Image 1 (tube, rainbow, N blue to C red):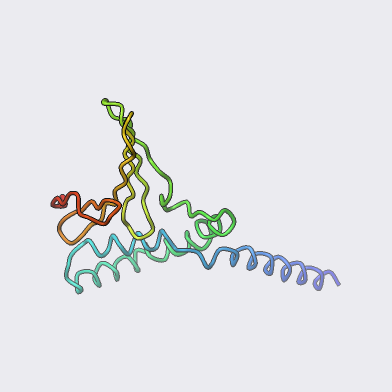
Image 2: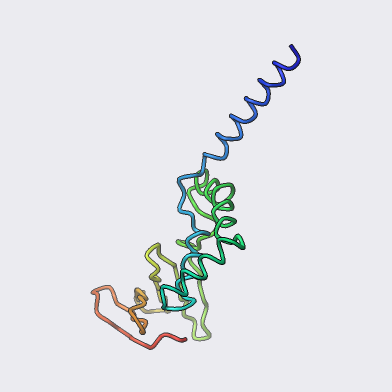
Length: 152
């Protein structure tokens, strides 16, 4: 009888563990995406990217990122609504010497929302967009305000 209750306890514990682990499985997998995006920047050649992918699977960087996302990041995202591995929506404000406040917010699409507040002036809203080899800033009407080469 002792064996049967021990077996039941193990089944119950395994069921609870699986339910807990599955609570965050439909998250954004932000850590895994960051490893993937890093891999894409290593070299423009698809063969080099494949080679880096193969090495990071063996090392095991990709599997570690997936496990971290499954157990931690996606579970936090499931319960709080925010993935701790992304900085999306968390605005950062810079105070300039001239009294302006510049707020920057990363968007899900990779663009950056910028709001410039200056005393006695209306707020200026811009969206910073990477476009090929340049970074462009668009105003509220969608007109390009600035375009500069991206640093390499």
